[in-house]
Length: 315
Ligand code: TUI
Image 1 (cartoon, rainbow, N blue to C red):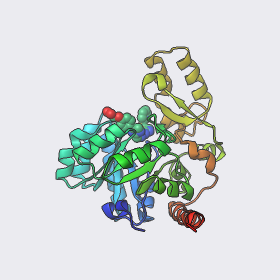
Image 2 (image 1 turned 45 degrees about the horizontal axis):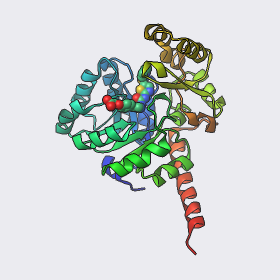
Image 3 (image 1 turned 135 degrees about the vertical axis):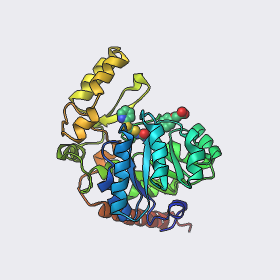
């Protein structure tokens, strides 16, 4: 399959694996890249040295292109931004902020820059500064989110810029891939479905919660703090939202969430941990390899597009 994104990055399928904090490490990223998609190593809040090791381990497992996601609220974001150059990483995605100060050095190093945007304003700005493509992420996503939905954000970003757009947020099957392309995207980024991949090294309890999740089982915590995060509901989110409604301070809320993602991913604490997942979790009901996920999504996308084209045929 050929799209502006597969051509730009020299990959087989226009499917990115989202750079999920604590989840997207070398085993997952390499499996996705080896299957023809774009594997992405997450930095999340991790130290630079940890991310560097993950990059090196990924290089040992694949010759295919892979990316690094830099979460810009990470206190070591500057160090990670320079590390990717030292390690010869070819593709960088960014999240939760504006990465423009790094553009000159990344351009100089020949790195392909794909910022995640949650608004048309930032999309335009990123294009002006030289982004190679944009990832337009709707608030159906898990983790840190913006305000716009994928359905409304993707076409507005696609219309506003000339660079290719990758759609993210709420895409978990071939119908979602087809829809994203109809909205003007040239690729998709998938997070939640890869939580269930065999190669994903997260605690079994986390996977079980995603498998069992229904449509309305995610909640957004932290709206009052300016950092809204979508997670699966559990005793921690209930307590958090109650405290938030009662006007708890930022410090009180932060104490509760400190280390909560690690508690879920590593320890499998599904009661007090932070189970980041998107609204599409309700659609997902099986475990597969990364290769199976990518091939099934692409085959299904082609099938539904052909079927729809048949129905829309002019008489
Ligand atoms: O970054 C994400 N999702 C994430 S990062 C993350 S790690 C984390 N852990 C604990 C607390 C906070 C984060 C978990 N999930 N997605 C990309 C994304 N970026 N979504 C929305 C945005 C965004 C929002 C506003 C990007 C830029 C922006 O505005 C920047 C500006 O300055 O205008």
